[in-house]
Image (cartoon, rainbow, N blue to C red; front, side, top):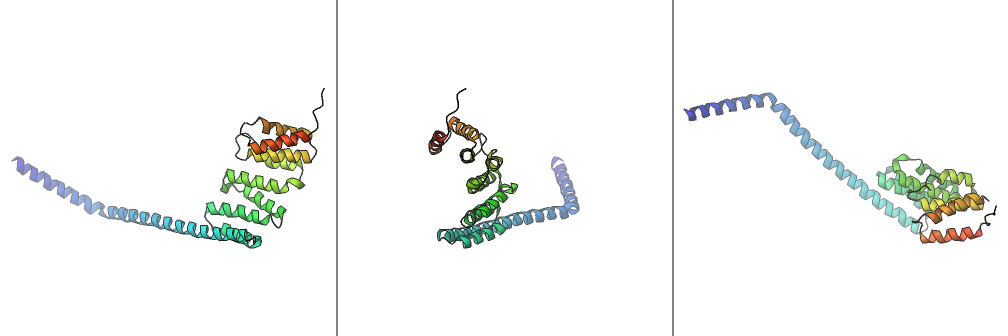
Length: 217
């Protein structure tokens, strides 16, 4: 009797599974098709992105070669064209290199290109800060301390990646524009930062020596 009941139970289970399959098989098959399509689509996307990256890398190397051959106008054009179509990483590098090539012919135009990068939130904060530093470096000799302060004060804050360069340029700008108090302020900040690079520390000490002595009260 026990074996008979087991056979009946097994038959009932088979009948229930058949009914479930008849009712839901179309959904199961559709789900499997979607999974296969999704996996295939993802693999295809990965392949295309890898291909784009490889093509961008090759184009970037060619543009670098033009720069090394002193063909700066051609290099600038190549980097600009690459930035218009490259994946995000190469796009940012190409924009920075295009601005660097432009600096050879027109520093103010190059500074504007760096300013555009600095204003582009999609490139990331560190790249934005680097662009600010590069732009300020091109304008240092011909702009006011107030302009440099507006450009670089945030980048000179503690913990900023490029704070050392920003502080040095602010000190130089203040000195060249006759603002001794501001120059001394930034030189003190440089001196007090234990992570200031030795070369920068030496330059700051040399500039400090050029400042008039503090008047005694």
